[in-house]
Image (cartoon, rainbow, N blue to C red; front, top):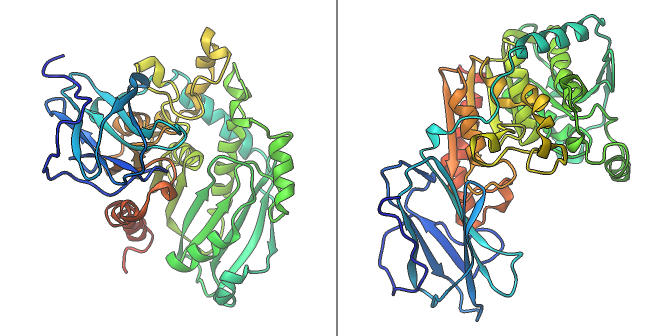
Amino acid sequence: MKASHFIICAIGALLLSVATAGAQGKYKGAVLTIDHPDGRYAKTDTVKVWAERLEDDGEELVFYVMENGNWVIRRQPIDLKIGEKVVVLEKVYEEPTAVLLQIKPNSNHKIFSGVGLLVAPEEFRPGFDEPADFVSFWENQVKKVRKAKIKAKLHPVEFPEKQKKYEGRIEAFDLEINMPEGNPVRAYIAWPADAQPGSCPILINPHGAGVRSSNLGNAIWKAKAYNCIAVDINAHGIINGQPKEFYDDLNKGELKDYRFTYAEKPEDSYFRLMYLRMQRLLDYLCTLPQWDKSRVAVDGTSQGGGQAAALAGLDPRVGFAALIVPALTDMGGKEAGHNGGWPNRGRFKEERDGNYKLALPYYDAANFLRHYKGILVMEGGMFDTTCPPECVFSAYNVAVSENKTIFTNRYREHGEKTLWDDNRKEWKETIGDARKELLKNYLNPSE
């Protein structure tokens, strides 16, 4: 590999102007910085990473480098004085590569400061091909659901204390819609109380991984903020508004490790009904007189991003899809030589004999995006080890949408809350606000 080498030593203070945004992660004693804030590099670029000690805490520091899911440097000591900034990695990569770097105190490996980057992100491709019967499989699944007449129940709800100010201006309900099999659709739905027929777009928010109620407050404030029919749907069709212990018991019981349930046939996957509840919900929402008959947006994070991709690929009425650090995306990444997306991260025993490949491609967000033609907004966290950025780019690169945008940040982990101080401020100004503006412009184009 030409012009590539590692420098793991203190070589004196470097007075270099690099993009830096403070300590990342849980360790504040040192920070890693790179000169591309979005973490994207071309194969012709020289990737440089600097380390800087921020606190004289007496800790011995160690350094780690991972490339495409494999550790190439582990627990390498680094001598670094406070205020000193040194090059710890300098390398030219000839192939598309996902690089994660960590610096840790040697006494506690559970805390670290990290940074992530991708070389040639536009060249990543999913590990799974689209199954030949992908379209027909899902057409048949949707037909089966639609054979059952929709029966919806709307139950008025009491507004949470934080949303009391919206009472009288917003109407909100606990929504239940029958399914021909499995749990019903369960969600909270809200819309402006004075909404005229044909005046409101639809905004659907599916949930990330876990077992919990739909979020009533989320539906209420989004209905007000975007003057829309806003829906917050829980992933499992479980009863809303119960005590925390109710969901904890489900998570320990019948829904324990639901995401790792092995399925050799696509119709046996747990995610089948999760996706079909999204379709059933949209079919119902499009019967509401308030709907403007044109605008449907779906906005999901993590597992919700995978659900958003599925609905976008299944139903052409979806005109805007936001997939934020999406799970269920490029789950076969290992087949292409890089990490696989959540939940396929080497946790299946069956993965070792290849059977997992018989079902997962039917649920991969990348394959749904091969069929979605509306506005697509995606975000990848360059330090996201749950839904790796190479998986997000793999899906983005095969998406057929002609109006697509992808955001990245070098310090972004899976959760926004992991960003600290000015890291979070930078992310909000360059990504968070821009994402919201794109959604607002779609839902309320005249404002």
